[in-house]
Length: 294
Image 1 (cartoon, rainbow, N blue to C red):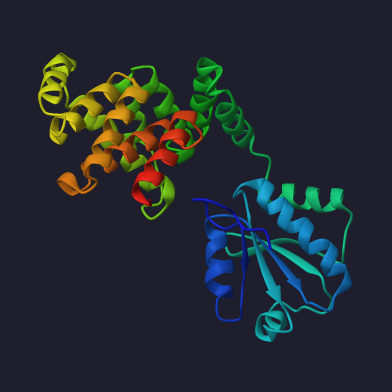
Image 2: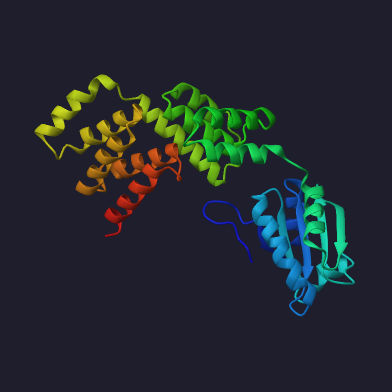
């Protein structure tokens, strides 16, 4: 079964008699749900199932695929009136909107899925923005803003745009974007938004005029971790990411538990601000892991 990876939700789920109401009917009020009624002995199911799972993964959350093994869940199968499998049923807002029976050509299945979820150009804009962020930030910003015009508060677009703005030194604008972001409180996006806001607030709290004074303190006492962490935050405020993370990593190496792990937390905040695909993030995540788990 294809499952979403990393911090994303699973887009393919197994559903039972006990969970059908919650995972299919109720969930369909938030996102389209496509139900695949199948059985291990069904030959056509072995062709259709993987295709549906592939389309669910490619949709990146535009719909959820719910798998129902009719042998193990007869109550749901009877309630749905299943007489032949594979049977594919689509629900939106708690109601069946479309269905088909039997294995179908890939093109037919794709058209079925598109009719269920609708064509959403914002998904392409978001994909374009993520690809352009490192090489063409101006174009990426326009794409992120186009998504936010159509879907105000979109969490991924908000995070992406805020990262671009922060990297360009437009901190106040980045904070404004994050503060209007709309995400499920329990979602990974909500946690990343909160972390990015903390990073921006911490950076703004340190005056660039303090840099030399902090360096003098560290030179006089290399073990002054409070000053070293403050310097790391100051450098982050100036988008000097490498230098900032190097200072914070040094503090972690000297005492990972100092001030309740303040240096490690500051590094995580910078990672959230830069994004996990940023090469600076990747490099320092590896170094931090080496220190923490050696």
